Image (cartoon, rainbow, N blue to C red):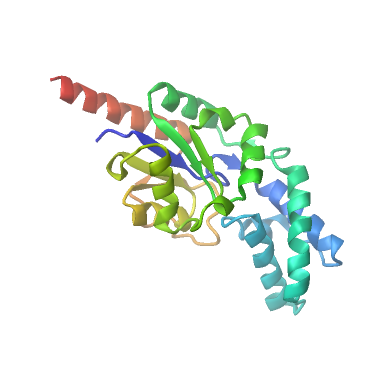
Length: 235
């Protein structure tokens, strides 16, 4: 099989953004008189956009401590979260080992690259810019720019349409069940990496087609498969 399009999730797949997301959530909580929460707790709520991370944290506070925030106050918190995260996005985040080299190798190998994330588009671009990864991608799209974000199949289909790719020659790399479900629903290969934010699901990668232990391994696999396919066509 030859791969022409590889799509990557952002948070927990390419970049460790947990600390800056947790900081933005906690700044928002304390601004509204609520107790800051441990980073480790907030990490478990990452994966569907920063706003959803805050909502999940508020739900947890209500269920665990009986500290419940009504919808009017929640709505008021969202623009403050956006402002806090806008100040932080890309400032604390760190690419996972080998991320830039892997993307560069794939780019040089003629593979079209996309970043498909449920993070808000503006924040996603700031993270990619701040970590030096933005220019590696042919296409970047955040969850708030899509009618149906992951795990809806239209998210991945949007990427394929933008890059003139075919599902049979594409894969999506992610760290959550949301990524696996989005890929499989769109008919592309679902590839899983184990170091990110699984949303508390130890079986998040259960239905993935392939598991990888590092981003350079992803690049090596794709380029090797493409070379092998090229040799077969030339034979």
